[in-house]
Image 1 (cartoon, rainbow, N blue to C red):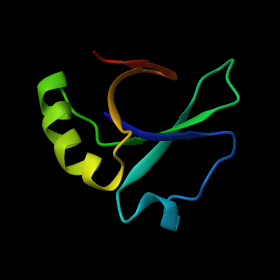
Image 2 (cartoon, rainbow, N blue to C red; image 1 turned 90 degrees about the vertical axis):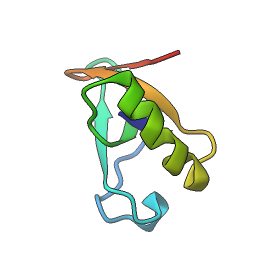
Image 3 (cartoon, rainbow, N blue to C red; image 1 turned 90 degrees about the horizontal axis):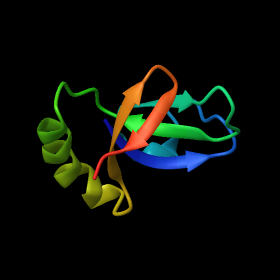
Image 4 (tube, one colour; image 1 turned 30 degrees about the vertical axis):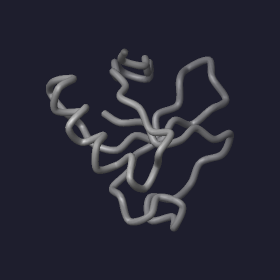
Length: 75
């Protein structure tokens, strides 16, 4: 997926902060931060292609790998 932001509070799915993107929240078991992710891709290449469009609205966005509630940045 592509992480667009991380916040200490949960936003509703249609929040204007998401700028029209379909976003879901992931919160780690031992974390106080909600990570907001756009897209579910079966490869890093597909996520990177999606990042090109998402970064127009969220320049700080980056590709992540999600396993359960664990989110890791992909380099």
